[in-house]
Image (tube, rainbow, N blue to C red):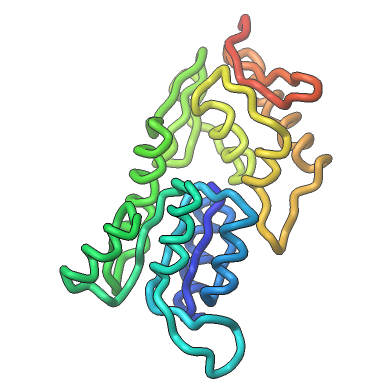
Length: 230
């Protein structure tokens, strides 16, 4: 998944960035309200992790503001990206204010990173109407365990190849454009080149050979994962 992490504490942001990246996600980090607003307006995300107490902008001494401002703006323009609020403001009335502003879930600090991951999976699953496990032919994919199997035998899959396969299989038969796949595997600091995406697709095709699942290229449209003869 591609996520936006809005957090002004550089130490916490770095810890979360490392954890989410290790789990295979692509993460853009915004340290203030202006940066969060810009990122969220120009790039679609699978999920947003939002701190509430943020500086208005990057300049030293910037006044503090509420992350609910950028959340309300997103909801007002019809953006339904799942939002998990992460904050030390954990009083009941503040949780209610966050949920009323459009947050989908609320987690008070301090928190366990494993719980953040679990809540994100639940939010995206609920929003997309998808599951954590899929099967196609002899191929099965487990999102939570981050592994895939052929006839029940688990095989290693690098994080980016996993994300490509997950995007194609949720659900199977859906055409996914090259642009969408590239965006999922990029951040503002690291853009994925077309030839790199094609290399991921090529390696996946080899690994799927004989499984009953095949990645087909639709010229000018993108890729589709579909059943194929073993």
